[in-house]
Image 1: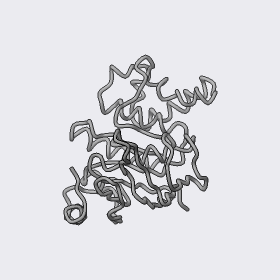
Image 2: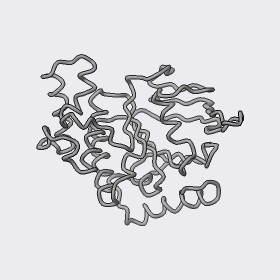
Image 3: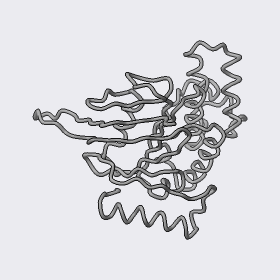
Image 4: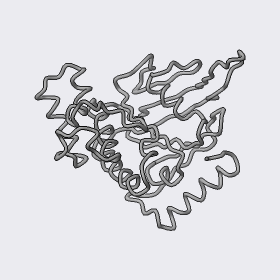
Length: 253
């Protein structure tokens, strides 16, 4: 069963001179239920535009996006999204940030705190329940952002370079934690990155997008068992294969 189907998707924007800037060109993609897919591409290739279209934040000019069997029209409660920026409310505590979506749905305080505390425990942040975002490290704030998206129990979790602003050590740690969360919650994940190493470490499949206009250049089945060892020969072989194709057909910057 597919959680996400994208069919003949095209997107462009108007320029000041009246011409059109083509951003996405004939994107066709299927993401299976509970699959972890990374979309890999250089800056400006349309990765974020694609994610915003899937989330229903922007409207597609041509083509269709189907989530859990239904074509999306506008924002969809079946989709959760995590941005590169932490996007937490600075005036709310950690528990109230996580419970925000449930509050908007009308759940009572006791029930929404019960759900939020379950996810706090999942990312080992229970002791920071009553802290404010300014009191947390960057990695901790991003963990809060991830579980806030999960509290609404989305069918599909979209992640737009969520670890891009973090240092290498914190980034590696959060990649491992994200996989732990994914295995616990069994969500379908579409994760944007421009790091080949990150894509190989995280995903079941890697979708390589060409520089603008964004087209699907190649799809890789990673085929490595988890947990993955970044220093293993097998990991290096997959990484090299991806890099070789990129150097011949695409450009990651």
